[in-house]
Amino acid sequence: MGMTITEKILARASGAATVAPGDVAVVDVDTAVLLDLSFLPEGWREVLKVHDPSRIAIIFDHLVPAATVQAATCHKTGREFAAKFGIARLHDVGPDQGISHAVIADRAYALPGKVLVNADSHTCAGGAFNCAARGVGGPDMLWAVTTGTAWFRVGETIRYDFTGALRPGVTAKDLFLHIAGTYGAHVNQNVEYGGPGMSGLSINARRTLATMGAELSAEFTIFEPDDTLIDYVRARNDRPFEPVWPDADATYRERRTIDLGTLQPLVALPDAVVNQSVPVGQVAGTKIDQAFIGSCANGTLDDLEIAARVVRGRKVARGTRFIVTPGTQAIFRAALRAGYIETLLEAGAVVTPATCGACIGGHMGVLGPDEVCITASTRNFKGRMGDPSARIYMASPATVAASALAGKIAGAEEVFA
Image 1 (cartoon, helix red, strand yellow):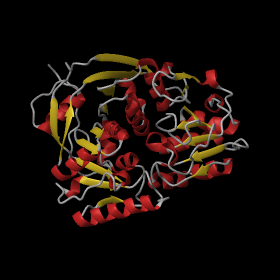
Image 2 (cartoon, helix red, strand yellow):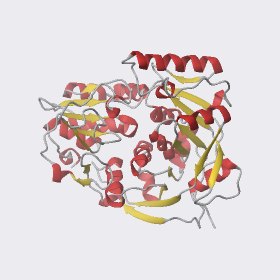
Image 3 (cartoon, helix red, strand yellow):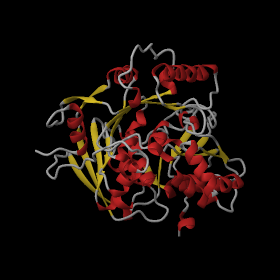
Image 4 (cartoon, helix red, strand yellow):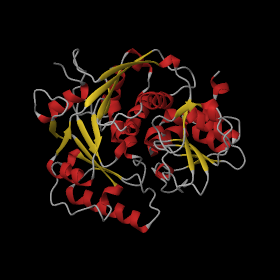
């Protein structure tokens, strides 16, 4: 009996001939990623050894720039840890910093056919690169750093085959909202994406979809490899890798086909992501106080280009805050060169440094009591972005930018007509 992509990667990394749902796989970790939050005093422990400094990366993202003494202390501890063990891949505050999953994408740290762990729930973002990437808790993170291994219970896999192509103005975020709204949660399951329509999805679009796998409660979210992916990785990382395709007779819990050409812009209603998707028109006219584009899911260069296209030559509505956060400082620089940042600023947006910031309700965009926000980020849970009484709608960058101009939820159809 054949294996899915995730099963084949876990089998290879554990030295087993095969694995199947229900098995526990103890695997070799190719890359372990620590965050600034990893160094919080309540969770951090003194480490006496590391398995391999070259397989560790440290990326400051949640608490950047440091807004509190606690944040600054986390950064100090992380720098000292990197110096102690000679960890070269330290992405400190500066030109190489960004949201961890976006830095991983910029640098191709998530290699096809390998296993990557990270101290953050959206680590499944690395699945865009045919990598078995998974977020783990503090104890498991320290175990991976010191032993080079991790363990996972193998789950069943749901396969999605894409056909057709997205229509102008319909994005990967809308595709995710369709999946979340139509099929709901994928608890204890792996998600595998492929099919002929995949070739029309950019690397950034795949990143958005893979990242949002965390909001499906999926274990691993992973894409089939293709030439676009392989060329992207080889241009950024000279380490050898072996892409993994599913076996022709792979066993799936279910296999579903989605015609990308049939999709429309969607919005997730507040307080939950799954089973909450509605067409934009159903909530159009809802007054907003803030519009946000950013996070590991939607801080890509593609997202900034779409936002700039929507607002070009227009102004953000009076009384509405429009906050845009690039995923990495490298993306910020690329958007500057392309003119997107100037366009956004002229329209009235506030562009921040690369950080988890507003997405986590940390800083640079926290919501106050009873405020309404429409966001192109990862989560719309009650209290996620600030006060628990605030309401958070989730949509694509195109819809968010159009809403910022209107001061109320609105579609961007006219821009892409």
